[in-house]
Amino acid sequence: MDKFSKFLEEKLMPIGQKINNIRFLQVIRMAMMPLIPFIIAGSFTLIVLNFPFIDKVLPAGFLEMLGNVLSPLSGTTLSLVAMFLAFLMGYNYAKTEEQKCEEVYAGITTLVAFLIVSPLSITMGEEVIGGVIPTTYMGSQGMFVALILCYLVAKVYCKILSSKLKIRLPDSVPPMVSSSFESLIPVIITLVLVCSINYCFTLTSFGNIHALVNEIIQKPLLLIGTGLPALLISQGLAQLLWFFGLHGDQIVGSVMDPILQTAGMENLSAYTAGDAVPYIITDQFRALFVMIAFMSLVIAILIVSKSNRLKGVGKVAVLPATFCISEPVVFGAPVVMNAMLFIPWVLSRPVFGLITWLFMKFGLCPYPTGVAIPWTTPPVLSGFLATNSIMGAVVQIICLAIGVLMFIPFVKMIDKTYHQEEIKTKEQ
Image (cartoon, rainbow, N blue to C red; front, side, top):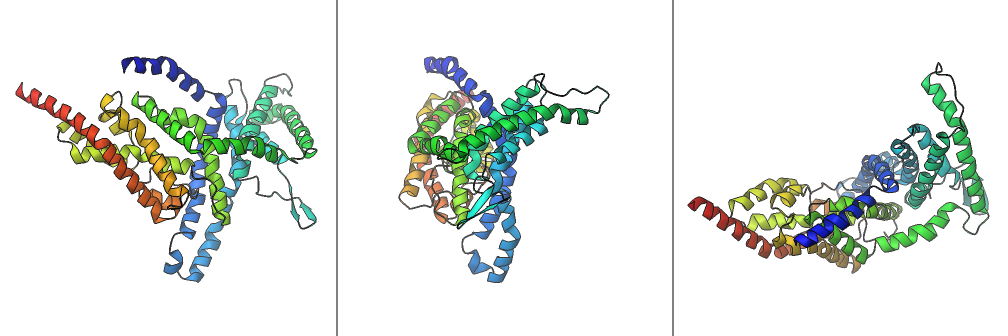
């Protein structure tokens, strides 16, 4: 165990840190975070309007009025998430730039670049109507373009801004005015370059960059990243890292988050449109059905522990665990470097993922709708809300029960050791 721990610390940990420190992934994390409250707010309307049996409880007239009142909230948040992301990618890239780069100008530049490469017309029959911004690529379908293109555009803009290609005004000019003029040439050069690239794409069979990225990058990544093998491996690795005291979710999530979040938004778009949701494995699946595995350990401790030490850990950990906070049990039991818990701990998440996947794959439980449920929502409630079905809650209960059975034999061994140590201490 010591040799394996040393291997992880010397070999795997530096790799994880390097991946975590990749600037592209850092900017993505920084750009995604501000969107969370707006995605949850937009999802709230879908939860209310599609709540099971709500049509049996509320009068039809009131329900229609409620829909008219709340629908614009989801339409202006969930349907435009890629557009917001386009601005935030440029803004946060500029924040990470060592040399001075105005965040707002960088954000607006990447937003305009995103709109340039997006279709600005719709076709109705044989008539093409211009001067409109279709929401087709403003939501989940445009997220990968927003992530990749806007990162590159921000990089080009900041690079030009740091060169001599800018208008310099005397120090007596107010900073707000001088910043505008300094950004003028970099903005023009960057956006003309984007326009040129966009024109080249109009000459291809793809028609626009969105179609290319969707076909060559987004679809393959989603196919691989939302597959069962990727889930089992990534979650097993996350648990392994946690076992050695490393933040497994942060390290693994830096790679998996963009893929699973995009899959979640694809599900949400389909659910909003009344279509069948395409993906089983999304960020909601991982957060609400897989990452709750640690709760089985807390329940097992509460059921079988006799030692004062484990009883104390159980009492302290139960409330945070109710809201999906694992640190008290991870470091209190402790899970970290505790060889007796290694097997059930590492296997628990893959087992939860496999059980949930099987229930959904064979039609026993609906797929996650993509509605954003805060990760701190207690299990049972979160499963119900995530799938809009009581079966979501049932699957969580089944997983937790199986998890408890997995942990109990190992918890008994630890508890026996702790109990014997306490008896020896009293005798002394």
